[in-house]
Structures are given as structure tokens and as C-alpha cells.
Image (cartoon, rainbow, N blue to C red; front, top):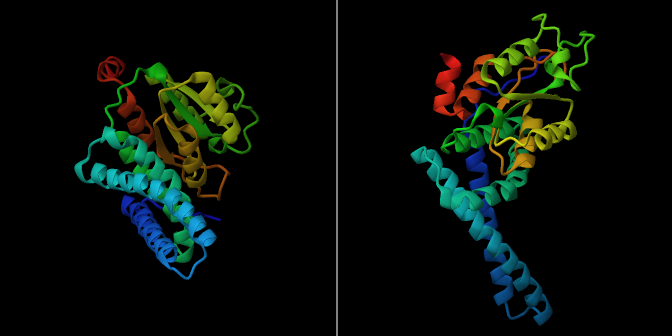
Length: 264
């Protein structure tokens, strides 16, 4: 069965949901304060509610700066270094809440995750990242390999015979052209092993919305540019990729002087 793609999904979906989550958290704090100030409550109840409120206040204040940082970064198309920490806190706290709000409003969870990836990519691109090719890791899912191919490439990617029958050959050509590192993973465990082994300072990751969102969060603070794959035959089976998007992500991370040398 052919899966729906979400190329038209914009950043404002995820930003709107985490903003709604922030407003909801503020209302919860107001309710807690009301009950704490209510004299009909026992001292024990008031103390417990006050302790809960104090814990929430810290998270909500930091997350407020984070949500504001995301919005300002998008509006001004620039990295706001002072708010890197709060932005990370906001995303980690409110991403699950955004998914919960999406379920409440009957919004497809993959649409929300795709919007999250768009926000992440924008934030990464707002940074002044200029890495050498050896500091970049291209992570691809094994489902890009043709299902009937007899050659195992997850352990050693150069086992690919480069027949051109799937996207693996094209990705290897990009690896060789730019001199970057590349790994093909069967899941999160192997992907994390590639990250440990290569110790990259920037990652270009290809996967579905679910794996990309978890991979981006697992790789923090390493910047990850996510490229969603296409699934004309359903998930995890003979998936495809728009190669220009992958090459564009690689080129963004490479230092200008290295880029000129490689292209010339």
C-alpha cells in the first residue's frame, strides 16, 4: 500500500502545537495556584500542590524562552545562541505533548513529526556550520536497498555491487564525491553505533518520520539534517529518496573551501 507523503507540511504545525502546550501548562499552573490559595484545602494538600507548582514553574519558564527562541529563529532566519539550551528543553518537554494534542485534534502523528523535522532542519541551517568532509556522517536506512538483493551491506556498505538498481549506489557516489563517512543502519542501535564509531560533528540522516524524530533527539547535541524517504510500497520496503535533497544537505555542512575543492 502506498503511503501518504507530507512534503507540504510546514513548520508552523509543530510550532503551533508546542505553543498550545505551553499555554495549557500556564493554565495548569494558574489552577494549581488557585487551589493552593484556597483556604478550604488542608495544609498538606496546599504543600503538595505548591511543590508541584514550583517544579512546573521552572520547566515552563525555560520552555517559554525555548518556544520564543524557535519562533524568533524562524522569523529572523538566524541562530540565537543564547537560547540553545531553552530551545532543546522546549522541544524535549513539548514534543510528546504536541503528539498528544495532535491525537486530540485528529492530526496524523506523521504530519506532526514531519513538521518537527522541518523545524529541526531550519534551526540547524541557521547555525554557522562549516565542517570538513571527515566530520560528516551520512546515515541511511537499509530499506533503501532492493529487497531481493543478495548482498549484505549493513555490516560493510562497500559490499554493494553498484548495479544501480536502488538508491544505495547513488548514495555511495555522493560519499565518494564529497569524502564523507556513510553507514547503512537496520535500526536505532546500529545507527547509534555508527555515531559512536565515526564521532561526527554533523549528520545527514535519511529515514521515515518516526525514525528521524527519535534519531534527531538521540543525537543531541550533534546537529542532524533529516531527509524523509519515500515509501511507494509501504514502510521499510524498497523505499526511495530524492537524491538532490541529500546532496543539498551534505553541501550545507561542508566548509566553503572544501566544497570548492571538491566541485572543481
